Length: 306
Image: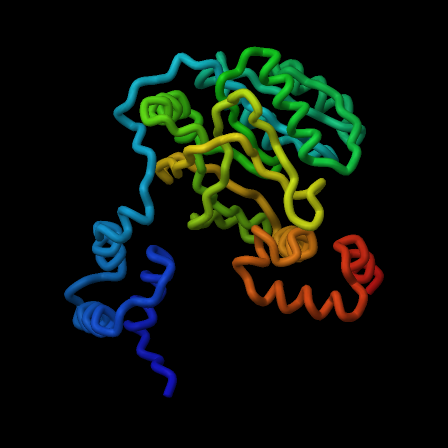
């Protein structure tokens, strides 16, 4: 019989969120009883788990608040398209207010209008045109070329729909200094999701590779079944997540998120991204393959045609 005890559901959710596993039967019963009796709250249960050795080992964060500030040169790189550039401008303005020495580098294509280019230039960005050739890693690597040209030692990278928090920007030199002292060269940043339909922001357990040391040979490289669309930075050895108080926010509507997920299903095809984490996408991909819809382009056309 299915156990529908609501207090046990609270315990299961907490374990899944914080430890990515189900609780042992004894822990499930004990914590459910404590919550039901009012002896602990759900927040206190989270605190108990977060103070456990298992959680600390699983969730090692780079601490930075008490560190010094790095003197290394930093570049913020961004590729923009389809006039989706407002987050890039806001990120630039915030970097400029807090740390004017961080050089912004923006790569744009034919979809960007003159107003955007002029605005970016007025804000002090290095703005470079690169024709879009259906190759995202190529665009990102052009940005890295510019970063090397201006002498950057560290790079902050993002997508056009991503916005860095003031906490992140305020502490970025402390973060990098702490990484340098411990020989980390790749820093993972916590993601918040902002739903453009409801205007609600929520935190997540996802961390993205957004800050890295610009070593010799470091570049962006495509992967999956469509490597011109999906990419990651390679040539780095020591990664760590930074404290989630310094985060970025990902802006998307429900329709955009659905499109992104289905697009990801076709791009990676059960590879290192969504397919490996979500068995439903793997099953759906197998169905679409059987009926001859084997690419994102063909699926999208069918979806739009109704």
